[in-house]
Image (cartoon, rainbow over all chains, first blue to last red; front, side):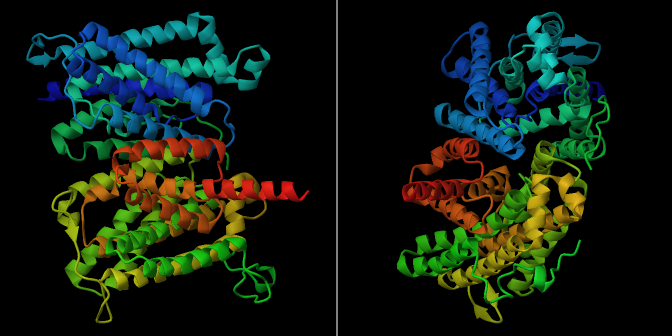
Amino acid sequence: MFQQVVISGITVGAIYALIAIGFTIVFSTVRVVNFAHGEFVMVGGLLYAWLTIVQQIPLALAIPLAIAACVVVAWLSYELCLAGMNKDNHIAQVMVTLGLGVTIKGLAQVFIGKDTQFPPSFSSGSPLMLGSMSISQQSIWIVGSLAVLLGLLWAVMQKTRIGKGMRAVAINHYAAVLMGISPKRAAIIAFVFAGLIGGAAGALLSPVASAHYDNGMFLGIKGFAAAILGGLGHPIGALVGGLILGLVESLTAGYLSSAYKDAVSLVLLLAILLFRPQGLLGRALPNKL
Amino acid sequence: MKLTVSPAASESTAKRPGVPLSADRKLSLVLMVLFPICTFAVTNSFYKSVLVLSMINAIAAVGLCLMLGFAGEISIGQAAFYGLGAYVTAYLANQFHIEPALAIAAGAAVAMTIGWGISRPLSRLHEHYLAMATLAFGIIMYIFFANARAFTGGLDPGASVERFMFLGFDLSSMERYFWVVWVALGLSVLVAGNIASTQVGRSLLAVKMSASAAASVGVDVVRMKAFVFAIGALLTGLSGGLYAYFARSFNAGTFGIGYSIELLMMVVLGSLTRVSGAIVGAFIITILPVVFEQFEDYKTLVFGITMVLIMKFMPSGLVEGVLSLGERLLRGKRN
């Protein structure tokens, strides 16, 4: 029982970590908490389900198509909504991303429908047996994708000019501008990455947890909880936060009450926000007042 | 800082008969007169009930307008207070058979206490974090409403209340309940208007512009934030209690994130700096599904697009933006 709970915790935690990375990238380059990020994840899952079930497109094509659509949605989100907004009006920014999330949800509802969909796993086959534990193939896909995407992100951030530019914008916006780096381009790339990783998270999750147009806000807030748990702006923090959150949730569901598992992780989010807003790995920020 | 203001320094219009009413108050007064005219004008009882619902929503929207518009404290968890008001009212009325008006007052008081309680820790957070924290609070309360079935009835069968009686009179028919809600809205608008036009309102605006600057001129920032959270929760709780007797039977589904976002829409659609704007916004959002029959299917999409457009191009609210645009055009013609 315990081992099985831990395995499902790690699987869910890996998904939360993927969602958290999207929040982290966007927050560090654009300084916006993207309330629509959960909807990117929802779109990834829902489109994957719609393409495989309704359109009968083979898996190998449906997965990249769904993720590509998410990238386009994320890019358009920045280009049409956030670009050119007053950076100091944080309330307007929050409301715009919130409205954007509602818009994406509305589009999914109108064009894809309100049905809950259960798409197939990425590979069919019997679960892997390790002693007495059984690990489903989708879990392996999820954890493997997390490792690959984290590695890819690390390589882009450390080795390429684009990644270095994005890190420069994150460290000091004005100094980066003086060095000839376009913050707008960095922001677009940040959103593209968020869409890519978020869409992948959605597609990976949907065979395990089904896909529904109304899931986005929930996935988003869980991902944000994971990001803030590890420290917003920290890719490794996102990983640690996601895994902790996944384990806490599956332990709660396994031993306490499955009805309140979401409440437990949200209480954890509130506690972290109030007592350690810089996260477990982050450095303390100077307090304003 | 003192919440009471000495008469000499006060701009409170009620105390000084010589000072004309502010534009916001005039507009609120006009709206308060328009509601009864509307209810006499429409004969269909369904439309009458929509009017009552829009006034109930307006009370909650006025509360959120004070929080978001004046103090800059964003809350995406207002549905929690709405639910608290409704459930506490229903619980007290069903378990202890107390006077409905008292039950509603108690529900509002409980919502206010909880709003004040969470504002103390939340006042440490700023914009994005505050929005996320209130969203989390709203979802936690929703999960509680849906699962604590002994207290709330959950999603099924939900909660229900008896008819609304006041001092032995049955006021539950829509024509009579209209006046109950009208009085409650009138009181809310009066209180909100007083807050807006006195030192408290100016302190809230100062906190919104810069908490540090406000503190440096003697505004007790934490206390102002706690105060506006408490007032916002009080009005939203009151509106929840009134909703309980309006619907008579309701379930936890009413108090999800969707309602919190609708409330934000009402404020954004109206004005972020005028109490009267919130009433207009509440009215528009409430009647939209009635005017357009197919609206329910497209509601989410239309709300989302509208919110993005308004916040991007008119961040002080739609009605406000249109008014100031009109003002500018008029001035342009005169010159």
